[in-house]
Image 1 (cartoon, rainbow, N blue to C red):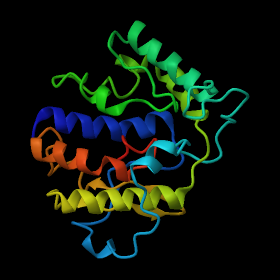
Image 2: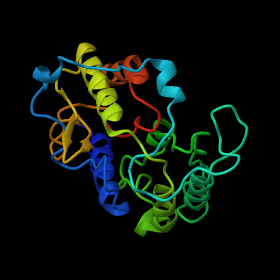
Image 3: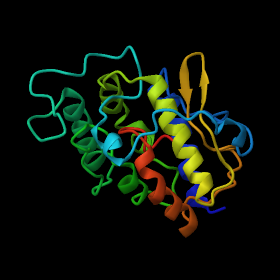
Length: 224
């Protein structure tokens, strides 16, 4: 297992606690046990690529109002408060955290995780994932998180379940299913984040991720 893979996994786990997300929390216990093959049956509402791109929404219920006049509808008619807050976070990461190539958010307001992955220092502590060194941009990150629109937990679960099944079908046999806990979605993926068994930097993993990316709804690409 590469140091970069271990750093990425640990950093994303810490991010959940850092910004205190009430749902879609990805913790050390996230995902199902083993390969989760028993949970494959009954996958409903499997999104295709177009569904993943058209779905808006944030990662938590009960957050601040995110929509207003002129919100982006995916066609460039305007930008949401969520997008503007994420842009401020991005600008902070560039100016204060020193990650000069930190990517702009997508028009939906979500961060571009694949591009962020490419900026992570393999010898660092995953600061690119969690608000910069010493959390210099955490205040901006919290504001953005609080402006994420409400999500449908059941649809998110079904999306991640379909994605997990796809990943296993494409060679990632240990990719665990998501679970529902107290009505909240617990993402799948690495069954044991403290001791990763899948190399996310391997060509095989990247190929599976590319093949299955259309299974994830907008905003879930960095969750499992």
